[in-house]
Length: 234
Length: 290
Image (cartoon, rainbow over all chains, first blue to last red; front, side, top):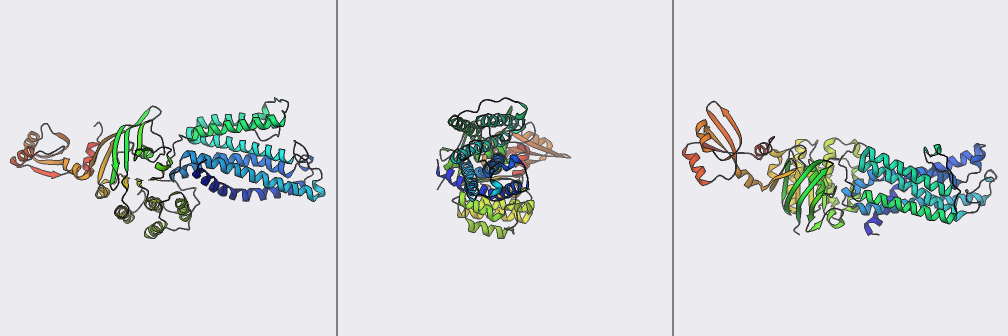
């Protein structure tokens, strides 16, 4: 990866971490408040990591959607190539996903260690009570895929306008639904609830490899679109 | 260091519409170029290619022999100042100076801060709170202080009052003396900015009508005034741009080299030869249907 890509990656990471600095604490407070005060078995059994993961899919989707319109224009204006922007934005998203999932994993583990009564019923994730590494790695992949499809949608609208944008929304829906078939995490995927097809959840190794493939293909699609995108003058 | 920008057979199409075709030119450092053309002539499309904002449909745009589009080295040498919408922008001028300092190795922050004082710009207010003229002055500040070998101002004066425009023009001349580069000024304010230009490029309906030194271009335009019949006789076979009639007196605007023989003939008939401004030449060279 080129030096400029790394530089942009670091800058975009720090920039978006300002949003994370607001987002995560609010989310944590919400989680503890809900578990403490609501007697909902569904929520009471949900771990902080799973709760954060579910909302982080949308957080990363939004980061992806706005990336092109906010950062691409600015960087090209300051003489940076689209390729360097692509590398930087991708690196920053990987950094964000690692930070959010990593921090939350540590905090969730602390909650477990402290052995507080209210959190007795908490189950780490659908992957198992003690699947710390597997859960955090798979959550990382899933939130990255949400970022990538958001990026695809944002670019779709930026480059092709309304009609092209809607095509990328359909592609994004298919991608996140396919990915959730692999994991059965029930991540947000609008409309897809209407279709009720289920397949047996595959082996985790298969799921990780397939997720990696989905992420790579989506990233390549993003790069193909971004590399010749005209910059808007507005 | 001398720089050269070269356009070879640039063509740009948007779906079916051909915005630019057969554009060829060479620009050299140390010169200020005026880019003029009517609305929709293709000026911004052309500048977008130069600044790597878009890729030409075909043809090549190069700096010192290197392709510009997606070329890190080449793109770092071009600054494109155009109207920008800041209505949702909460960042301050200082934030943008930080950005320019980080991504433009040639950015001179001290000079930028001097310009901020000259233009009376507030550095701690979000850009959205600045007036249109102040936003333009800020854009111009970034363009001037970035000191890239190619600096483009595309109607950068929008909203500026006359004294501010004057400061802007003076700064271009001072910068050109201090750090000679290629300045491209795309403008509709021809009479006001004419004195800045070394060369003029006129673009009309997607083609480059001419690229000429200003003095040469002005020598090519002249008017002949006198009794109608004499004027009509003398201009036969010449390129007439415009004619005006007042009673029996006719004035014709002509374009082309004024040969000595022709000049003698005009003088023999006691007709008057007058100058034509760049503004007038532009209007008549780009008249509908030409």
